[in-house]
Length: 459
Image 1 (cartoon, one colour):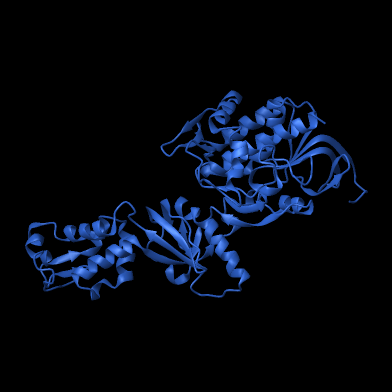
Image 2: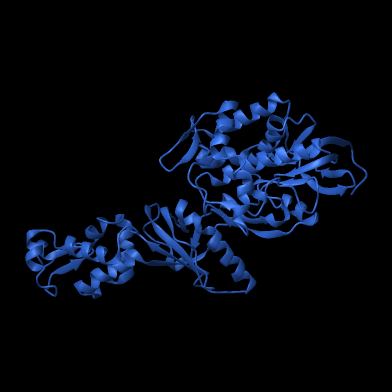
């Protein structure tokens, strides 16, 4: 490393990153473990907790009270148990309340501050730091870290260096670079001998191929189920929830849950130099997951013949009754002799979605029995070609990161470099939407801080 530093600072514990996990690491050390040594928190952005301030559309969905089984992803999802079992969500919320933050739980078990403002979370955490005379040094980046015989030396972007006895890497992932996301922390861990799995955008909107963008339905929200099937033979689990049709593809909570699988297909497509105008796979949407195919078909038929004149005609399934999607300007058919398919589908899906469905099956060429079956099948299995994701710029979190196999699940200390700890999103752990990622950041940060403090106090 360069010996010509403007100054060399010293501290007992260096925390790289002033986000959720970094701040909780500091509080875990001083509040829980009673550490009285010097702690320095370095943040490259102009203020700490930027992702927290932006989370939950500014409301900060900071945890979830639901069962954690299946909510985390990575090479070893069970790695989260080490921290989450030592700081369960109920204990974490009690901790926050002792510091002054009251919370509320919504219908989906998502936890928010009572104020419904992310700034409340930031102010309470920074107040807790200030009580211990701790602050965050902002607009300063850690350029490199070198292991020394009795600790570490970190080079800072301002030309100074820091000598420290322990380091906690809480530098996050490349997701949301506008909020401070970067590869810098992962690069440092890699240079220190740790395995890093390629980061990929997760919890990010999906882009569809140009031909499959849902023209005319932009801005429509719907609830349903979907799965992603890559053209490499891999399939995601089915997700259920809210989707949003956009000019580029699909957004909304449910579609973003598919992003980690789409990102993996993108990586594989690049590795195989795949050039395919049909994209990398398809999203298969079930607009009505609560209804079976046969039940839906029967519903459409019975709804089409719901009124007295309809029921009389139902006896002849091949009568000359007109089915239409647009009211003709002039017609020899009587109104009662016509079925408005747009209105029929509007009874089960948003009107604009219904129009997309009808245009996809060429409804004018089908007789009634085949038509109802085709509509039902499209509603239950609507396929859209996926081009990819909107990338790190729009991603809430990243999949991949530092291999958890290189760290102790309980202490979060490196198995390769004693005195080096890691927490939060920098590790190969990402969670579902709904507060699981912040829960992991808080809990793992707190545990890393406790562990680092004990490591130093036992030294």
